[in-house]
Amino acid sequence: MITLGIILMIIGFIAGIPFLWTVGVILLVIGLVLFVLGSLGHAVGGRRHYY
Image (cartoon, rainbow, N blue to C red; front, side, top):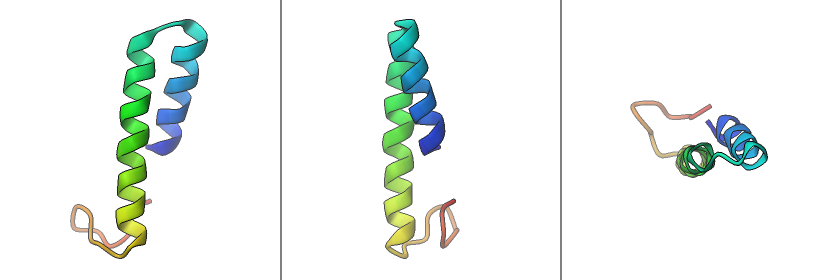
């Protein structure tokens, strides 16, 4: 999810499409939050690790 967010942000920036930029930022933030929760040992969505 983090990688997809970065890719969408780059495409949105290069193509000048603000919608892709916004979706990319949202996916990046959600991916980072899930990554931090997973690395701290909290179960996210019934899973101990988030990959």
